[in-house]
Image (tube, rainbow, N blue to C red; front, side, top):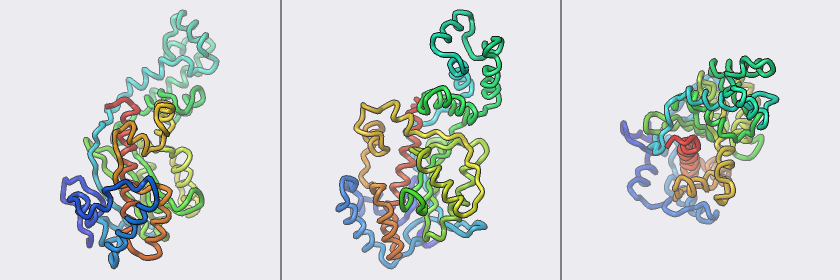
Length: 350
């Protein structure tokens, strides 16, 4: 392909020309943070436009075209080190945590739980022989035995807050490689096209990233259809940052627009909810870039503010110059890397 590819085994960026320059020090386009203001970002944009004038997306990026029944889309693939590993599947730990919480059974509060414990009902499994609570206890036990992650999360969510740590314990029913980390970039907050779908999976000590980049808005349906199998894979569990309020509803709306049938019923762990519970009040804000700095110790030196993504993508559309797409792709890639690391930290896996 015109843009070349990363050598086998190399951790690399999904673009070749810019990636080589970045790793070697190059012109230093991204050496300073552009997040504090838009002037620096637009200066970088102008430099990129000048550097990539006359080139195509295929020239600039090490991607490949993928065809599907709804058309074709452009896919970028890269890998990054996973410094915080996800622990292996541990269904016994998850089951023990759920069974220990008697208050998951309707009608049992703090005082009733203490009374039942004094009577010898130490776990929900013990309540299966209780005349009043046996039916609901049996339902919870069936969910555990059947590894019904969605059902258990719904049950816990009815009795506790959506940020309850017990929901993170439910994630231990899943093997690390089954988590699908999701982040999208759009042209607006609602009823606007998705221009980049980013997916990531943990593979051993690395994060494998796949990004569906729209070379034109006509590729949105194809990108959605091509990414859908990963989102609906059997046994998969989604991990997002604010995906409950933004990413998943947005994707559903765009799928409906194109008449693409989808379930999207996989278990969904929204890291923002758990991060707020754990760090609210101790850090300035629970935004991903702030958590990167305050919790993960990462200082982005090359980031494009998310609210500037539409501007940079619109410039690409008007000029057909791929330069402005580079910070959009890298912003999304870094979001996925930080999301995976943050999820491992929230679960206590490091």
